[in-house]
Length: 577
Image (cartoon, rainbow, N blue to C red; front, side, top):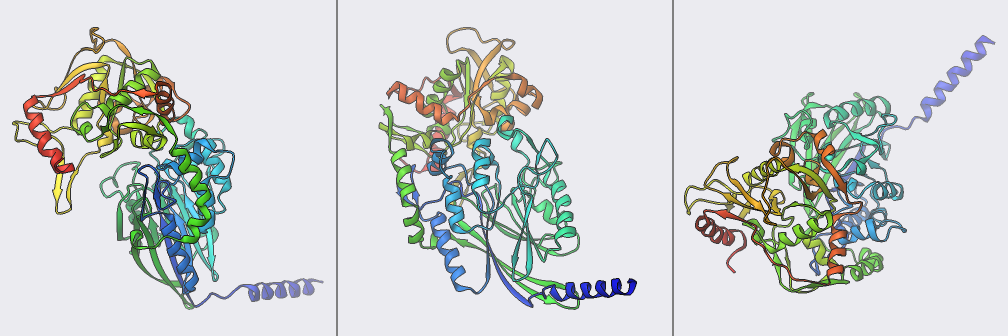
């Protein structure tokens, strides 16, 4: 009996080994990825009503052609931030929610193998991203988005893609900075682990459990050249490439840069880092040769990388025809009239001082929040809304992001300190009318701002001056409330601002006003349930005709210095009128 047992055991082992597939000697992979598409699904700009040369229609044409060549095994990946940034996705997010989301329709049609969740994919809220996660026919990854209830990932942490017997592991991570930008109810039930910590944990699990032949880090996080030494950096892709062995390539994003670089991991192995910018401008492409080494029992890898310029590609007519009915539905939506503007407004003026564009948003925010003071910044560098009929599409120029409207309690001193911080990176200190005002750099490609204009917060509800001849901390002088009442540094005021700023985005409330993260939460009086653009639309619909005036409640002094600098620098940034 005992001999029979050993006989059957021997037979079982022999059968098991005989069933184990032999490794394919040579495999050619082509790994292609998009990142930060921000709703560029169709080759048409619905906001500005014109055709575009970069969208997933062009990407699909290229991918389809590569698949048809059958020269390589194709893997198509997306690196997050697809659910925000365009009327096409906004419509599915908030207007037509009873059918399958347009992103699920498009990406399933294109045959994506995996994707990673981006911070702007979290922004529309649970009802949107939970639904989309179910509708995708591929795994949506985020290993470091951890469920509070059981400590397990809220989304799938990684996936295994098998090509001719080779196992390709894809680990998804996203920037952990979401709590700095978004209110907790949007990401309730989860928290975000530091990327380095999560990558260490999951690469070990993947290696021990899956024994992969090739490992891809699909990270919705920027390269992070300047932030790598922070404790929990927003952009940590280079940090992981250098500090953690096991990755063959890392696809990064979030920072909207184009990059192809190589780094060395702790085992002295080369790691590819590639970033395809944003809005489907590039496809990240890695051509990988896997050659089986029978002696070492592993694949030797050769990787060649490039960024494919999407503007050079033709759109897929098959794709366009397939999604034309969906597109036509959204086109009709954005063409709907919501009101009338008596005058034209532009964000160009908002770079240099008080402007009708900003005052419109300020007055709407103060009205909706019943606030004493309002803060807002220009969210576009060069947007214009013409006088005449205002359509839904124009609201995407007026307000680019799906922020909520917050109402918070701030003291007069905190308001003053907030403004000091805002103007610190907005206007330089000047010593004469010939000195620069804005932080501008000029190269052979033209002139651009070096600081982030979406952090140029101005205030409404108070009258004040910004003295650019003085250093940070001593520039702001608040003379009174715009109502004529006395402004009191010790009094608490109701302040309207967007949720990005209210959660500490830009550091105006934290580093500027000196509030802790806990204090930000305690100061919150109210939050809208829908995004601010929705309420702007309803406000304008109610008004019908909007006569936009700039009330000049703040100005930059010395005025002659400011005027001279504005004339010079407006021409640098925008050209002569």
